[in-house]
Length: 455
Image (cartoon, rainbow, N blue to C red; front, side, top):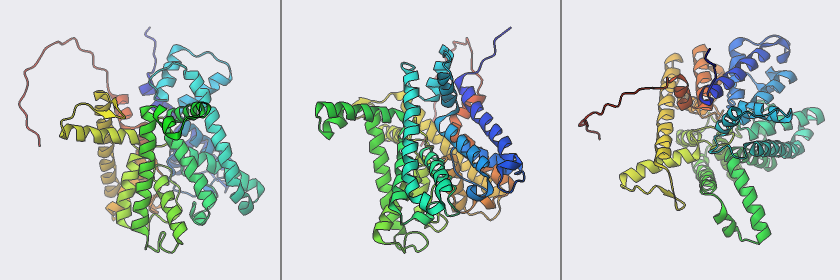
């Protein structure tokens, strides 16, 4: 009898689906809701999906609809979704001192999107310790503002919830109906949230490289420039792209929203600056909002589409096509136009297959956004392109920001957003591979070149 097994291409999407199904069942239980009455299937499914896919779009208020148990379920789902189901399962095996098979090590390597399984268990421990340490520090920083506002018990719970949600780029909170709106003049809350979002979105490989590089540089008495030169080309690219996008996004939001009374127009200059930076950071798949997204100018919405679509960086908790992917896809176009075949980044050559893969990911993700936007507009009559595109890009890039559209979607619209969130978390390419049948052919025939024209 043939042994049945699953590859990582099949197990990873199925593991996220299994977590969503389990979360849906738990959230449908009467004691998951604050009212003590069961939640309908679609609402529970939507909430479980947005939690596991660390998106943040909600059809009911997290702070008021769900009980403490329901909120705890959402928090656990977001933590699992941010780290990855395979990663969490592997950690449980490690804690219980179970042996890892070669297949499990390969699965973990694929789940973490690493190039080698060498030292994989050590990396797993460092990821978990780093994650929980950062989240604990974030919760402590949040508590200085939330405990005086909400009281000790609720303040501590909200601090923990917000810290995990921000680090995992989940974008959900249990503070109140305006998300971070009530803290638009509180630099401590905004800076803590931005720090958690950025750390979660940088990726674990960058963590390790920066940590070891700074420690080594400190021992050797290196200057910051010397430390920077010792970083890997991936780390330098991620840091350069991350801070460039944050700065450019903040400048754009500041300029386009400066006189808009519906967003930052009535704020003081320092508050305008920090809220512009906050918006730029949260658009990188975090989903918290310090001002109304519905009242933004259409020019700012276009900037938002681009920042949300790009998202965070590889091997982190953020979504989107990822900074490096978008950069390499753009670089692929530029090098083709310039007929430059070197493909150099920080004096290191980028593999041609990696360039093609990046281009395919951007192309397929763009096509998915177009299809889902058309489907959403077709099923929700009267929905304008600005709001529909914002909602779909936010869902497929697992951002979680909305122009107050999500709760008003009809059944078909909610299902479309659920599918968009799921595809965004596992990636449309992964779904295509999931359904693809491996091609086995012994046909060695060669065909004459065809004559085709493009452009």
